[in-house]
Structures are given as C-alpha cells and as structure tokens.
Picture 1 (cartoon, rainbow, N blue to C red):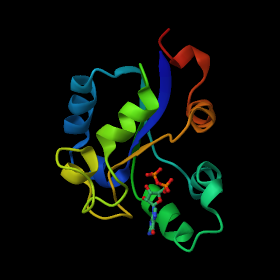
Picture 2 (cartoon, rainbow, N blue to C red):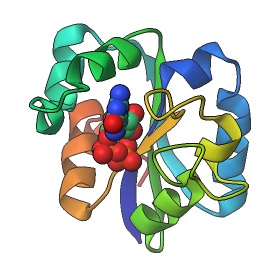
Picture 3 (cartoon, helix red, strand yellow):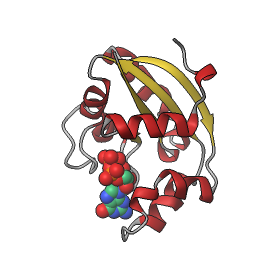
Length: 138
Ligand code: GDP
C-alpha cells in the first residue's frame, strides 16, 4: 500500500466539479483515507509550492491556488502515486489523455483542476503539510 497526496484545486471547487472528481477517484479503486476543505493563504501557498519559486509562472500559480477553497486528500492503494498521476493525466489538459481528470475538468495548464504528488518523498512532505496522524484513517 502506498499513499499519495491529492488536491482538488479552486477552479474545480468553484466550478462545482469536485464531487465528480471525487467519484472518479473512488471508482478508480484508490481509497480516500483523509479529506478536508480549506483555503490557503498566499504565505501557505508559497510554502507548499516552494520548489517552483524560481519559475516564471510562480506568481500566477500562487494566485490560482489561493483563488478559492481547495479539497485536500490522502489517497491509498497499490502504486497510488503513479495510479493517481495516470488518472489525473498530463499537466496541460489539452494534451491529457481522454477520460483523465485534467482532460475532463481542467481549463488550462494554469487551471488544471487537480494536483497529485510526483514521488514518495514529495507525497510524504505534502501529506504532512496538510494532515496530522489523527486525521488519516489507518
Ligand atoms: P504537476 O506535478 O503535474 O502538478 O506539475 P508541476 O508540479 O510541474 O507544476 C505545478 C503546477 O504549476 C501545475 O499543475 C500547473 O498548474 C502549474 N504550471 C506548470 N507549468 C506551468 C506553466 O508553464 N505555466 C503556468 N502558468 N503554470 C504552470
């Protein structure tokens, strides 16, 4: 069993497709073992996306992720990190495969509906950024 971190981004929450995304996650076989909704401050968002601080799109990234509430989750399953990235699809919705979350619900590369961890180290960091042990179902 592996764990990954998932975020349903503001454009999906504000666009009222969060429920559809959660249904797709459940249908994929990944188990939701933690979930909550919150709104990030600019400071929290900059900390979460610290790895991108030197990128040209950093400011826009912070704007987008703080534009409304997000739903954060911990997902568990065999190869959860890879499985969730497959379900999400490529970062650019226009290039993402048919039936992936980003293809179905993403608006643009900046507003691509969902985020998922890209490796075990990132997953551990991102999960502990948002959740304490009491909030995660064993
Ligand atoms: P992910 O792991 O697939 O989410 O992609 P990254 O970690 O590389 O990028 C984080 C987020 O930054 C992406 O989900 C996009 O929302 C955003 N992003 C990535 N590339 C670009 C870009 O070229 N321009 C802008 N504006 N945003 C980008």
